[in-house]
Length: 498
Image: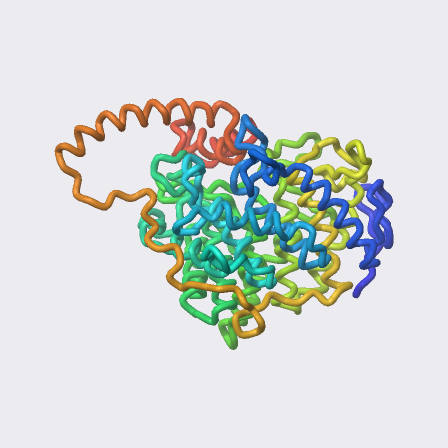
């Protein structure tokens, strides 16, 4: 364990041993960290109502205007709570987490493609739930009840991966890669982005390690290579957001969001872990450059900053973006467990950032609600589930150094989760399977007219300012949005809409 160093950022002194804020915590004391984490977790769960009568299990309130959150963030929440259980041993939220991950899995495929969310279903949305299921398998989170023929956590992760590995998800535009959205009628279907492909890479790497099946790592390798070839990563491994298929992905949108880098860090660490010899050396080089660049971009002054929307004079982050810091803290800490040589560099970075995170937790009626900015030494008034997840991740991951946190297990090192290599079945939710006849066309004409009327209203609603933050940004500009083309138009749209 390396004590937290004293460091100064912008004239603000961050304490070495105890972060002075309404949320009191000694960052070098395991009991104090667990207590603070339990308080932040409790406050986080006040944003969740899915365990109340008449509410939908698994999701945060939304989507807008019914609430601030989209479906995918529920999946991210349960991944956070699984890590909370792992780091602290607190079993309070096991039943709610288990119920949520099962309820939203979308039977009969259990591939996290529930019919209720088709209108906003992206590969990244599906993937966030899949990563949480994978985490449950790796951490030996209690298995679902055997009665009722419930799928195991590993099977759920495999179902997501298998549906995303289907040929129709990897078309020939831009030389391969997955599109952002799954159904062709969704806004964003013309966009291939880093988070969708990064999650697929991440799942492939982790499934390869858990199962010892190199087919998964082959997919992961191909995905990394495609992202590099198309320009979603540059030579320094800056990770950019995405590009449109209409330009053959030449209009790379060079905004940098931290979760794009974070999801690749975790996946690359797993690829390093499962490799040997020259292949391992290759992944070490990639991982080292990715870690160095991520720290330089997002932790430049110590506290983590979401640079593309967290500006010195204002916050332009949408609800989604307000949650990214927590994922990066969790994924980087997890990377240390499978690539231990990263320890000092990563944990020193996360400790300083965690001290800053705690300083933001002095708001709300209880005086300990956490804000979004971590580099001001005070609560900024921006409250939400994402901000609580961020602070919880920052605090609890420091236990990596202070407790015996087991590394992710595999099916040969104690893992018990039930799997199915054929899970997910045929990904047929959005495909036509029979030859179209004249009668079909006549009926389809009527249905199409009705559907288009619905879509016009729906998409007008989404792009009218209520859509998921980043969806609005990339879709109303550039090649896919009918407006100005090219990166400049995209950047102007980013400034205008954040």
